[in-house]
Image 1 (cartoon, helix red, strand yellow):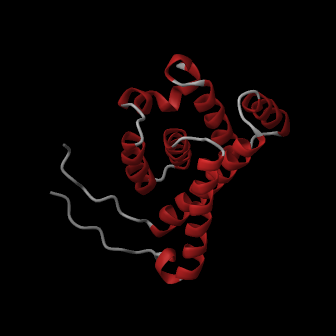
Image 2: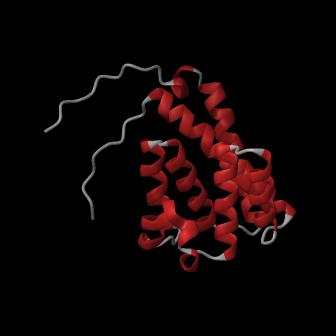
Length: 160
C-alpha cells in the first residue's frame, strides 16, 4: 500500500476561486456553443482527452476518459488515441478534424504546420465548429495547467 502523499502545492482553484469560477464559466459557454454548432459530446470529450494526454494531466485524463466513455467513445478509440492519425478508420472525419485542432492549439507548431493542419480541419468543420473546438482545446488546456500546477490527486477507485 502506498503512503499518502502530502499536499505541497497551492491549489490555485481554491486559493483564487473567482478565477476558477470564471474559467468554469468559459467551459460552460463552450459546452453550450458545441451544442449549437452540432458537435456531439463524444467529439468534445475526444478533444478533452487528447489535450490532456499531450499536457500530461493525470487528473483531467481520469475525469475525461470516464466522460468520453459515457459519451459513447469506445475503449478501442481511447486505446489508440495517441496514434489516431495512423488509425483513420476508427475516427470519423469530424473527429479527425477535431483532433487536428486539439493538437494544433496545444502544441502551437510553426506557422506552416499550423496552416496545413488548420486547412485540413477546415475541410470538415464549419466556422462555428472551428471556433468551438479552438475554445474547447484552449479551455481544457487551461484546466490541465490548473490541475498540474496544483498537483490535484487522482484517487484510486475500484474498476467495474
